[in-house]
Image 1 (cartoon, helix red, strand yellow):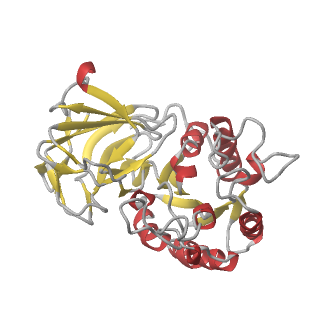
Image 2 (cartoon, helix red, strand yellow):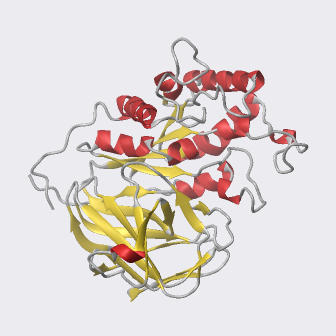
Image 3 (cartoon, one colour):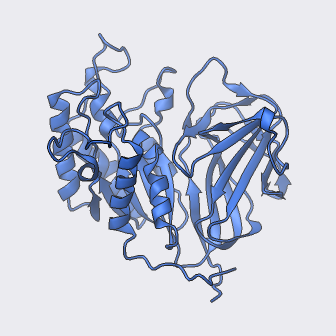
Amino acid sequence: MTKEPTKWVACWGNATSITDRREAVYAKDLTLRYPIRMCFSGSMLRFRFSNLTGTEPVTLSKVFVGHTPITFAGEQGVCLMPGTETESDAIAYSVGRGDTIEVSFYLKDYTQMNSGTLVTGPLSKGYYAYGDYAEADELPLDLSRHTNWFYFLNTIDVLTSADNHAVVCYGDSITAQAWPDFMAQQAFGSNVSIVRRAVSGTRILRQYDCITYQAYGLKGATRFPIEMRVAGATDVIIQHGINDIIHPVGTDVNPFRPWSDLPTVEDLQRGVEDIYVKPAKAQGLRVWSGTLLPIYGWRTYNEEREQMRQAFNQWLRTSPIFDGCVDFDAAVRSVTNPKAFADGFDSGDHLHPSNRAYEAMAHAAIHKLVRSTPRYDHEEQF
């Protein structure tokens, strides 16, 4: 059965944040290439590029999807102004569910690499090559390497069937790692795309303004309105807040992490409601809370922080302001010691899950949000 493409839906996305500050922050004569798996069939694509956290203009000299130029107001190449996001023209480009497209762009001149996000997972791989290979079928093996930094490319929309929609996964390093990718794999074949908006180290209520921790990103009130510009979104899962609890250590230990940054549980609740839930509901989205994961054994763990986590989780599970709760904590915690990860579910740092745990988190989210979604028609085409 042929369905007419009638609706723009985001089929892939990341957040944009300040990249990690190193000695060198510029690139020149560099090609970036990002393979993206299509979760929907469609007839057209459009692309958003972001220089949100840059302080200088960024010129993408050539931009391609496969061998097709991506244009901006009819022009090839684009200058991304600092603090802004730029959307391409709609490009006639037919894709099928399961296809992999490659988005490539060339940075000819010195370019400030200050807008990007570090993400990992089975569907999150990028490449860079020294030289201009934006139009090449393959990057030269001797001049290219793999990267998990996604620079400038922010969102891809597809013109697709009206019954397709997007679920946004919003959070910090837990969400910047593998569970959204595993969720996308488990949801494949449904009418749901998974769009990740996550930045490692971010907090709901605070942000760092020193170069040491700039990569920990913007606070929730700044991030959320920008990152929730997601075409076709119907739901958002919010798994955020653990960094508000674990970061403060006192200025005698770290001058950038004062005890005054430590919120109360009520502060976190009010922040989630005012910064996330109310604006998302105003957009017509369903809002799902995601409980915070175990931290037993983490280097700043103490009983006060654990009590805060437990109290906040209880509120996330029971508050009527949410449409439901994805209980990630229950999916990964130990039965005998619920303060800790289950055996095999700890990555080793006692904060981030293992891949097995990320798969369990994805399953918990799928069970809540996608279990009743109809499977796609194998004859669907455009």
